[in-house]
Image (cartoon, rainbow, N blue to C red; front, side, top):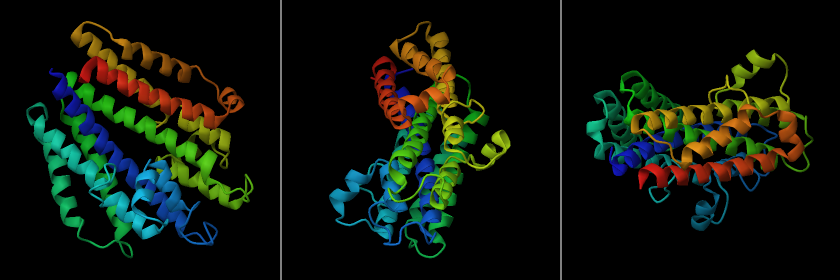
Length: 316
C-alpha cells in the first residue's frame, strides 16, 4: 500500500473518532452546566464549558478568537467553526476528504457512512443551538461515529487498510481518555471544593459518562465512585474498551498484523509494545504514588511520539 493511501485511511479514522469524542465531552459539559453548584458565576474560567475547551485541546485557539469564556460561543466554536481544525465540522469534512481520496480501498458501507454523515451534518449546521437542539445534535454526532466504526468492523477485509483505520481509531481514543481523566483530576475540581464532596462526586460521574463507562464501573466494582477505582478503570482495566491499556493493546495488535503483511517490524512496534507492557503490568497504587497527572501527561506525550513514529515508519 502507498504511504499516502495509508495516511488517508489513518487520519480518516482519527477524525471520525475525534468528532465522536468531542460530542461526548460537550454532552457532559452541557449536563454539568445545568447543575446549580457547577459554577455560580456562569460559563467563565473554571466552568464546565471551559473544561470542554481544555479537554479537547481547543482553549488556545478559542482565546485567540474570543476574549471571554461564554457557553454559546464555545458550543459554536467546537461544533460549527470552519476555521477550527478540531471542530465537529472540520473533523467530518476532513474525514470525508480523506475517504474520497481512498474510496477504492473502502467498502460501500464505510464510504456511505462518512458521505451521508457529512451531507446530513451540512444541513444540520443551519439549526441554531437553542433549547434541546444541542443535545439532539450531540447524540446524532456520537451515533454517526459509532455507525462508522460498525461499518468498518462489519464490512472491511482484515488487510492493511483495516489495520491503518483501526490504528488511527485507537490512538485517537487513547489520547481522548487520558485528556478527560487528566482534566478532571488536575484542573476541573475548584480549589474550594472538597475531594469527596457533592461536586466532586458528580464530576467523577461526568467523566464516566464521557467515556460511556458509568454502567461498566458499577458492574465491575459494585460500590460508589472512588477516584482511584475510576482511574484504574480508565487506565489499567483491559475489560474497558476505552481504557489506555485496551486502546494500546488493540493498536499493538494491528501493528503486529502489519508486520505479518509486510514481513518486518519497525521502531513503532517497539515503542507501542513498551507502552502497552507498562500499562498491562502496571498497578494503580504505583501510578498514584508517582502522581496521576504526571503519569497522564507522560502518556499523552508518548502517544504523540508514537503517532510521529507511525508516520515515519508507514505514512511518509
